[in-house]
Image 1 (tube, rainbow, N blue to C red):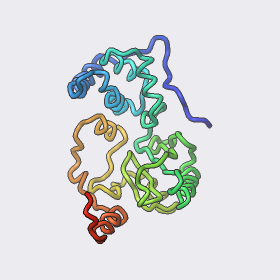
Image 2 (cartoon, rainbow, N blue to C red):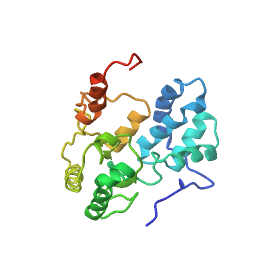
Image 3 (spheres, rainbow, N blue to C red):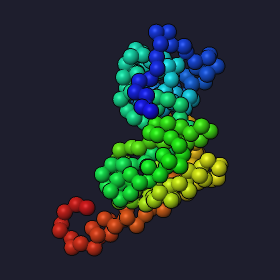
Length: 232
């Protein structure tokens, strides 16, 4: 089954209900006011409407266009360019398996295949219970801890097919799950999108996770090397 490419739009895109639009307008103003040019706020506004709907809908496209003085076509062009903006409804947890070169050869392909079998879904699809959306994704800039799985854009390092399967089972069972680099349980996909829109992550200790030894290895090697007199 192929994944959707375009945000579904109609010639008469329906707007949000007034109560929703008014609420989102207050958040949107906070975002837009951070930028010297309103159109520069488009990316965080797309995260805002994705937090509302779980993906970028026609109503979300229209809302962004109206707030920024853009056409719906201009907004849709951006929304369909960046892969973080979803075109179809997203589960409570978005699970992304890195299958780029290093993660792939270290087991990423096997992890992705195992999760597809276990969840019964393909790339870009969501489980019937609405809990998990699965994707294979490009490099997460975490090669030192490969193979890496991300859930709602939080890292789970050094994964195997077995640990990744245990991870999604815990998520589906509603058990608290903490990523490799945070001291706070995961939030939902929609909550994550609100954070990406620029609003505070209010989870206690969300940014207090441990640094892995792989991430510190380069720093340790630099500290141990003879001083060459250059900047570090």
